[in-house]
Amino acid sequence: MNRIPVRAALTAGVAGLLAVFATACGSSDEAPAGAAKMSIKLTDAGCDPHDAKAPAGPINFEIENDGSSKVTEMEVLDGETILGEKENLTEGLSGSFSLTLEKGEYTLRCNGGSAEDGTLTVSGELESGNSPGVGKAIARYREYLEQNTAELVATTKPFVAAVVAGNVAEAKSLYAAARIPYERIEPVAESFGDLDPRIDARANDVPASEFEGFHRIEKALWTGGTAKGMAPVAKRLQADVEELQAKVKTVELQAVQIANGANELLGEVSASKITGEEERYSHIDLVDFEANVEGAEAAFDAVEPLLSAGDPKLAKEIEADFGKVYATLKPYRRDNGFVSYTELTAADTRKLAQSIDALAEKLSEVPAAIVTGEQS
Image (cartoon, rainbow, N blue to C red; front, top):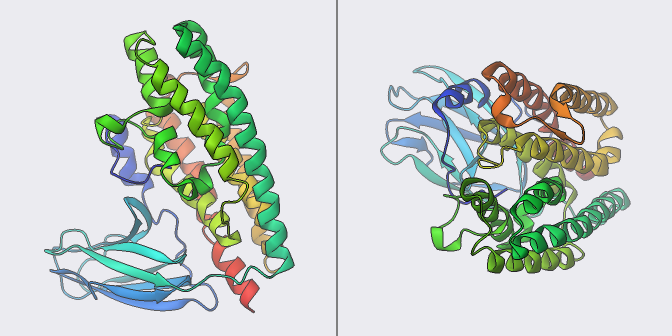
């Protein structure tokens, strides 16, 4: 997912869409049962309290504008990824949203304040991990990770060989196939540590001296029409995906982490990947989108039995919404791939974002349902 810095390269035309689609990304406006309550006031200085603490699990953020004309929105971020937000709270207005958060530090941001960024420290554990249902969900998803990292290693090998041989046409033809398995496992990309940026960082995600992996090679192939100088980068990429294959066998996972990751990934698709920044040189973005949706669906399928036990209606709605997203992608499919992302109009990207947003909004309810269900 590469959530380290803010991503750049937004085109002016697509940037206008972000204002339409970046509403409560990754969050739910309804407080789940058993949620902790956190009251935040918007002041000219920013968030009050500036720093806060909360237990891991579902949290309902209740925001009130305390007479500020400068600050009218509040966000919770993981790095630079917005997990939840409430906007347009002018003087006298209030609003709320809910998130399920794991142990860690998050940013409380009240945009426009003189000290707009504070820290939310979340402590404790979401679940004991002793439930048979939770264990089965984690085992099922780990199997998916192992299958896709094995495919990643297998599809990256011929791509790397073509790059090392300097065969640009061959490397280009193999690039999309190598990208698919990595995009499928992105719901838990942050668990991969520095392997994620080494494999998948885009330009501006990391310092120029650290920019390598898939997208460094992509840039050379499509903008320079050459593989010159890319052999060392390609060999490191192969070593990194092989290291990742070994890592997923033992990486620590939680059911709620898997559910959260699926929701956050789809939120990232509709809020930033929709601009075309993911595959900015090859323009195979729709290949990535479909793989992201497939990965999110696999994550949901793993935890779906935990959800269906308490809320079968929501589970069915989510399954239907996955089908709607695939239907929205279908018109752009060509043979075994998709049309170039440059062929899509603003209306096309708007339709895609709306279908993904609708799915993500329902997925945002899953982590809290799992946690409260397991703790009841």
